Image (spheres, rainbow, N blue to C red):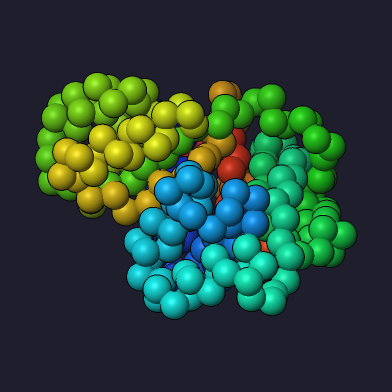
Length: 243
């Protein structure tokens, strides 16, 4: 089963969802806009848009907000033009970091992230500077009281790789190209999908034992998360609290 680092990353993402619901509306709106712009406004023919809409519903984003975001993406309503940009670099303690952004001004976002990395003793890197140490995975979070054994059986039959049990349910982990299939199987099994995402899981981790470095790293990650253009942050640190 998954180790401490994977659990810590899942737990951290969940904490962000619970603590910053208002900001998530903005992030969800941006994701819907980009998905609709790239693949069109019909979720039946646009898997990214379908996933973005389901995630927006999971955080109780109003239907009118979702509709307006789709129309902005298709150009039927005026609005800012967003694009996806992924940044890579090293944070405090040599921790590898990937920052996924959706921005209407790439240069502004780049400058802000470079400043954040530098402030905490890190450095923004070039493309593929740390990406090689991560694997893209699909992640489906569900609410359930079913046993780990039952969930594992359902997930493996759907083509998933693993199941991680958490306090209020479980997280199913799968290959990116299996995300839609696994999500459909979960729904067909009468399980409630809370959210689904594409994530970057580290292939190797760095154990952080120094409290000072750990504190600096956590402040750095919080600073990144506070940036309005940042959608998600992934890293390969194994913190003391993860044990």
